[in-house]
Length: 240
Image (cartoon, rainbow, N blue to C red; front, top):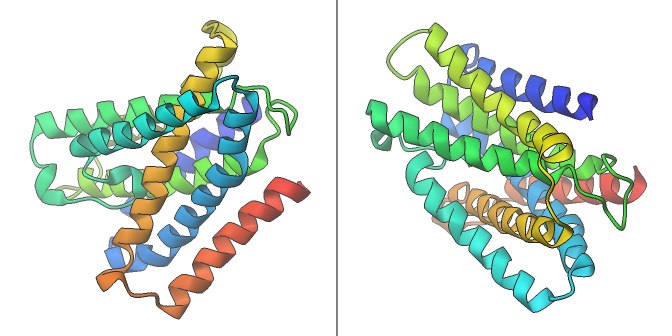
């Protein structure tokens, strides 16, 4: 538990701090985002959704919650401008209000992600879902990078920005610890929560594919990276 929380915290911090070292260019993020999106999509399909439907007594109702999670993520993106999948529109994040809305939406999303790691799995021992952990890490690092790229658009590193990054980095570990030790959630409610998160992941991963594919063309580099991302998810899921 502590190890997983530390991994989530440290990797997110690294992703955010890289924004102060690496000059942001959206073209440089395309292939890493495709890999992360493909990995996250594969983990959702081969890990999260099977668990949700296997453990539910009402799979058709669970399908509705997956859809709700998908559209909930679309709603959150009206505040985040796409930061959670490493893409953002600077013209949408210009005021103090929009920046706080961005943070609130990202923290809500991250808390749900952390809670996802606390469940008992019919396929893995608790806290040994390495593919899911990696999927969240691959998704949060570019999100943290994009978040700090937004924050430093017009100024150098500031204490306030670091505090915002720290808050974002702590959100998933807090969701993990809170759900495991403090909040008692029934199994039925947990399944609903996981269905919502799986819908959110489907939205994020598929959006990455759309946004990194100009004119919806399939380049060979993008195709190979997508296959590698999915293949890595399969290897980690079945052979770790």
